[in-house]
Amino acid sequence: MKVREASLLMGAHSIAVGAELFDKEITDFSIDSRSAGAGELFFALSQEDYVRAGFNGAFHDGHLYIKDALAKGSLAAVARADRVACDPELLALNNRLLLVDDAIAALQTLAHRVYEAWAKPVVAITGSAGKTTAKELTAHLLNESGRRVLKSERNYNNGLGLPLSVLRMVSEGRRAEQFDLAVLEMGMSSPTHEIRRLCEITPPDIAVELLVAPVHLEYLGSIENIAAAKAELIEGLKPEGVAVLNSDDEWVIKMRAKHLGRTVTFGIDKAADVAAQDIDTSQLGLIKFRLLTPLGSAPATLHMSGRHNLMNALAAGAVATCFEIKPAEIAVALNTARPPSMRGEVLDFAAGFRVVDDSYNSNPRSLVNMVRTIAESAGGARRRIVIAGEMLELGPAEEALHREAGREISGAGVDVLWGVRGLAAELIAGAREAGMIETRFFETSDEAAEAISGEIREGDLLLVKGSRGVATEKIVAAIRRRFPLAG
Image (cartoon, rainbow, N blue to C red; front, side, top):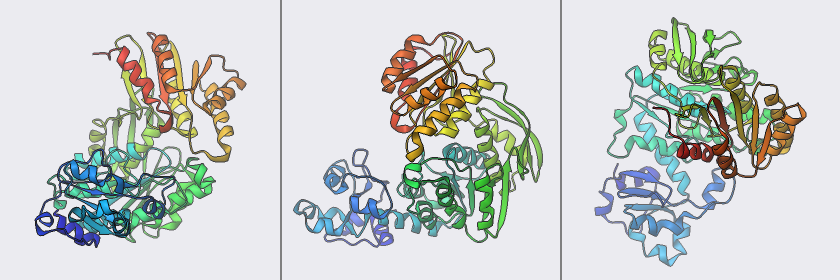
């Protein structure tokens, strides 16, 4: 995509941009001057843009970094016209500026118009947990079927990440016609209709609802509000689209009423179109089951741990079924899938212990589920150890939710529980109330990392999990620095 085309699609104007710059090809799109590179178009985001787009918090003004981005080789910057008009330093750069009223709106408009011109199917995935794993599994199944899939990068699922993911179709020499469909995460963390906005950028043809759980309560207040926010994905479906719903989740299955078109369900406990039978989770990092779909059944193997990941696989299988992919083909593709980084990775160390790295994020439901997983499938482990970080954005009930999770962990069959930072002290208190003896609390992940690196021994099985802000991945990194992996 050339600068001229991007400018027209965004509705930008310029003061002094010449034909030479307009005719240059954009290599990529950036919102961070620190990673800006040659040939990119840099979007200078400001607090006003963030507020309008429903983001929480205070943010740096991207206009302060336009000069840095241009010095690193960015072709041009998209900037607020009112901000440039009152800044002599920015006016001096006017031959490299595309002026708009709102840089986030411009980014989203550009992505929407690229999507409109492409006009192929979008699979959108949301849920209180599991979005990235389900997205990766879904993209993997569809790729293995021969389809050319654009997918969200990492966990790019908000009003910035989704448009940047869409623009990958026209970045780094790619062309939109090289892709047959898109698999995109859609997330939310506040009551500002984030998912509704994302559906306006890329209206979904297939909408996947994984589960509703008590996360982001700090901003949303109640589980009912979370369910309503997640349901915006179903409300945003195209009329002829397909709703893919978790039949085991009472909040999700109610969303069936929000879509008059086709619904495909997935589940384990309740009747579902796509289901699993004969489930074997006796080996950590391996789930064997029989996959049932409306197109038949097939034995399947998933190289992941936990019921939650089996549900993610069933969700992906339900999407594949919407594309008429047979269960035997789905099973073959599932066998080659692996968990995304820090989302349940099983690491075997030469010293004879194992670490389950689930450090990407945490909430009470996902923590307890993962603890039960290692307790049930860790036959032969000398000690089952859990290091759990504080869980963030849980709202007024955060202390009670941590304490209740601790009580549940105490009864789940693990031997040792360590808590890291802040409200993880309540987690420890709950476990002690329920009779658990071997517990410790650490103020930081660095402290916990130092302690476990000196204590972990042959035969141990360690689960590491915590919210992003706690940085429990430092614990896994410290272990990997000190001990070599097996093989």
